[in-house]
Image (cartoon, rainbow, N blue to C red; front, side, top):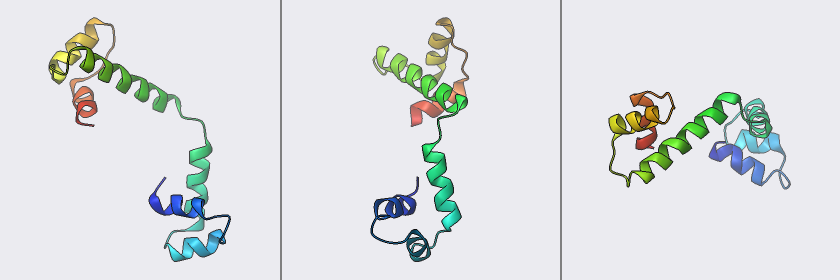
Length: 94
């Protein structure tokens, strides 16, 4: 959720939402759409991505932060996880 939408949510009990949307130069429909997205259950893909990040980070820490993306990919593939080197490198940059 963006900072503007978070500010609207934080003050929705004091001020009308339409007034805050106008003051912060956002559309009311955009605000309500972000509220719906935040309340929705995570998608299958989002859950899989979070799991993948967790496994890559755990493997990186288990290897005492010494392995780079190519070597981590080999470790993960030996453990049965199929992941590309670019994906591992992206997770390590984060």
